[in-house]
Image 1 (spheres, one colour):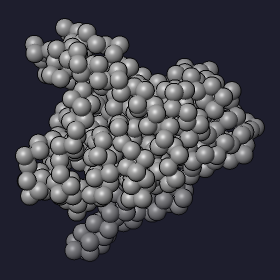
Image 2 (cartoon, one colour):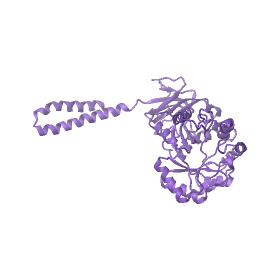
Image 3 (cartoon, rainbow, N blue to C red):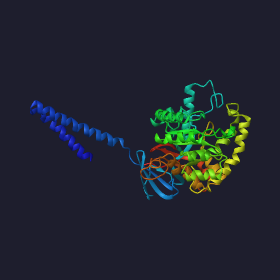
Image 4 (spheres, rainbow, N blue to C red):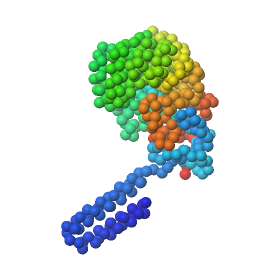
Length: 436
């Protein structure tokens, strides 16, 4: 193709030398044509140069994100996409990941990516500068990416937007971020107020609408929004082309599902009937088994005395731990219930997101393969991105990680991420690999 393009360009340049023998008006027309041909050639040439060479990944064990285990395959990546998966084992590969478990980058559907401990060691630092906060948020993003999470959904901080956009522009490195910006939490808002607010968030650049339909578990988790208010929020989100994610405990779980909301978070103290309602309404469910509460308890001194982080509040969280594990076990018995992976990672938990896999398998009784799928294809489906993320398959984004060991045999292998590729770019490779 380039050979023929070169011929076209040479012909154009040769023709240009003959133009001086033509009348002035004819010469001008022909020169414009010649210039167009030359410009076209250079545009095509630059476009071809911009396309990187194919990158190959050799894998002895690959979990495809949809429940299949492939052996002895080569994944071919072009730019930011996976273009093929071949049964090829001979010849050098760009990255030889044999002996590891290769799988799609994980997706965490519930984080608070900008939450951090300040220079004072606390979750609130009134003397913190904007620059310090920005560096801390960037650090959270980097640690999360290094842990194998290539996409996260951050549910509720205006600061998420700048971090999301900086990552999208390759100014800083981190996971792909979807953000709710500022959540709906005021129980005094009318349904019309709520609809206006949803439109405001859409205009501000929100990717999803976050709604608090219950108090914090530290305050007992009682319902705070009515069915009418929830219906206004979730239906308006749908009109605006956005999903709606609801913080809900107790009775608010089924109310949110009946209101047509996309996903329910937590669900603590919900009944089996509530869970069945989620399944019947095709509402995604994101319960947490251990990481977030254990993180709070481990960092109690850094939170205590801030807002509702009181001694009573910590007692309520500790009390919820066995209830959450029991809820998770019950949820797995509900036919058709789509349980996705989300950690609710706050300050202290970023980069440790994968610990939730261990809690889910060890304390919640989940099968390791189901745990992986919940953070791959099922999580992508909950984000409406199943055609782009969550699987190692041709046409998908090249988000690929590798871990030492096999999580299907030992779930603690999720702690040992040694290779991270996001959008075709390698950010971590601490495994000896061969190169072309």
